[in-house]
Image (cartoon, rainbow over the protein chains, first blue to last red):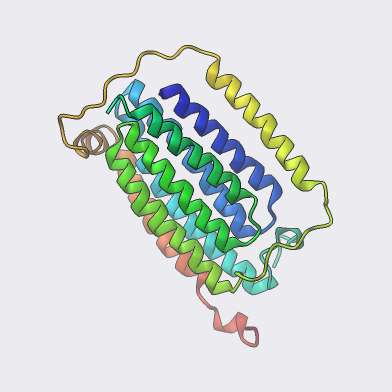
Length: 97
Length: 174
């Protein structure tokens, strides 16, 4: 079941990668990154069956980092939307404000 | 448990993959978020089937509960629900992205299936679900835990600073 979990996780991660490449809405990009983080978490949980509980601890830490990243990233999205009136990454081309 | 496990494992694995495909093809952020919640629930079920009961609960509470609510809240706040992503000038972009995703999947699957894995240890079902994780978290990984608490503090302060409506700048806008 470990290898099957790794395969599922690889497929989910690739779907997340494809989503990041395809989408240009900043919110959808963030959601694809969350999907990739979830796929990596699934890998860590699967390997924790082989190498002990540390993998599950890593997953707890990754979830915390994901929560912090979502909060900061969405705050940045709100700031960008306030400035440009759009979250389409195709129209946001300058780093200066 | 072992008799029914493969059936349920493949059921939830198929659910996760189908829901993530549906998620990645949405252009509306709200329906994408709802499909992503479905993916999170399926992954939580996979955690439970892999013996990580505590992480299954945390996945539902933190990811499907908190993080996705924040996403939907931002979609509502920016009033983006009806404004679907406009089809861009790059008409070949979805095809190219799918192709790159397939190539990446092939790479990952090849590396995943290349080597033999050691036999898995049986999940510890005698103890309660939280104790092994908590023991490892608060003894072996205590430094990472403390750093994480600092990270959360910085994230709270930073998101307030970033999202705060600055009256001197945004006056006249909105």
